[in-house]
Image 1 (cartoon, helix red, strand yellow):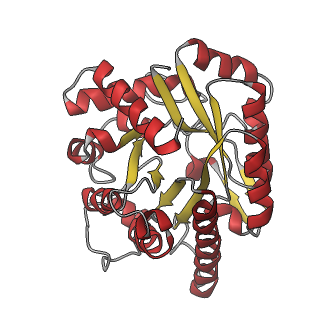
Image 2: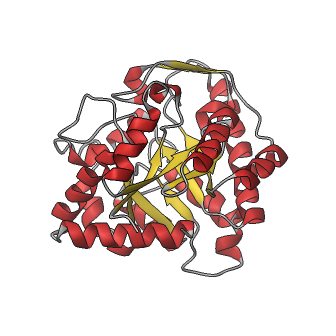
Length: 312
């Protein structure tokens, strides 16, 4: 078994097209396994194909990212350092098509799926925003149902709008702006069989790149959702945006995972560069520092958590 595992990266994206094998070999040679994450059908298909190219250490999830449920444009200010601007054509989630894809390689989860409120409140059309949210919810519920059928965990993408991110210490779901974490929690409680039929604690899924409040974290853990931290935990603390230190201190080590979200938001000391899976060790080191434990203890626990959740 490896020392590290990056539970959420995108080396299946075109930005890695010219040196993809080099990036993956660098991770594997540095005792790091990885899970490539599908964001729509074509990137899901590529992630699955890659699991057949590498016999060990490369896995996949398949799913439809909430921002890809509608036509939209995304620039670097939104997607973070290391990414490329892109437009989404919009996709309707075809459960049967994804179900067939799940049979073709080492698929260990469904997603990334969930709710993304980044642009909510930033346009002059409340009706248009409501329609976008409903499209996201429809796709999310369908992916929960697929996870139920295949008995796989969910790879969750949850992102609040700018106002909520600036008020992330607010725990009330009735706070000024809609809380995507609370809405995802409610949908999971209603639709996930891992919660409804298997009891608690369930292995429901993981909230990658977690940026919510302590209260959001506690609600997720209550229903068996692991908490994964990414590169921003290594940046200069900005508790007014998200109190990563406080959240990590309060999160039980047996519910923590780590992800790079490559190619985005590389951790220190690689900030500003294109991110890649091998950098997950820097995130694990920061988690250990905040928790006041050794890096060896942190990496061992995170690997064990990933094995339990993804059955690898």
